Length: 197
Length: 197
DNA sequence: TCAGCATGTCACTCTCTGGTGACATAAAGG
DNA sequence: CCTTTATGTCACCAGAGAGTGACATGCTGA
Image (cartoon, rainbow over all chains, first blue to last red; front, side, top):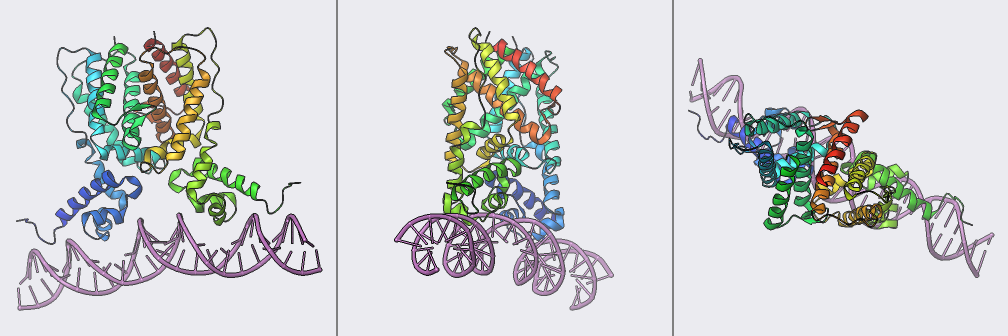
């Protein structure tokens, strides 16, 4: 019988993982470290070394989780064109990322870290992202230049969300209120539809 | 007669500014601090406090410089359409940013810093960017939705360049060799032209 | 019950950073 | 020549972080 005991390795292990996510989401990667995570978890940092072998191990463990951070993708309605599907997915991704500080911080970290140091998490996130898209796409076939167009969309969306989180705007266009975002969503939708027409 | 003396406030002042740019470009914002800059400049950090009042003052001083970091924008050929102009400018911006680690690190810093802490530099960069674009545009008039389209272009370009610098790719498309970039440039150009047709 | 182990805590070292006061000396002016 | 000031250097402090060895104690099985 495994109840909640004062000493419980599994529970502590899980608590540390949860604390790591909270710390990253709330404090950002700049303040992410063994001390901060242990503080958040309310236990000693020594346990991070014992149970995960250090920060690297903790990051690897977080990587196993990353697929769940985006939630479920929107399901493709059977009758839609590729353009409509792409517009819906771009919209869904933008809103999901906007509501997810943890994922924002991770993306930022990947951009800021020395190359290679964040490899496990980067790969896990990349794979999760692909799966998210693949799950949304039914058996729609892609136009030839969809790869580039979608890359541009994803890139722009990420930059918008990251910039909005820190400055409330990007390149002049305001991204503070919901109305601002609705404006952007509408514009982006028509832009995607035009590109795929 | 102001020659190069062993003691020369102006020269030291300039050396510190230069060292600040080098440090940021080479080490990134994570390692940017009074110690690192002083090391780079080969003098004591005390002088940063004395001549700039601290790191904040040094950043403000860098802000005065920022307009020159992008170099001269491409001049608009008189007979071009807005779409061609936009495609040229996007291409020029992408290549200029790609060749400019200092600007890359600054953008990344702005995205990662706590809101407000980088205000002087952010404003200076924003202003410089506007001037750069304004200098390139002659008396072309913008289509109605050019604001959104251009924002998407700038956002995507920045994300591409930042991601390429750290991982050599973005969302599956490789961005390592010049050939990769040429491919992206061609695709982006046709995409911009289509959007503005 | 009690010995042994797993879990958890503490204290410490080492290094790095930002920041400051005290000191040395080159330059300039009387 | 000598005083004064500006320029530069050094030594130090407090704080935070990574990492580690020693210790305390709850849990478990014999």
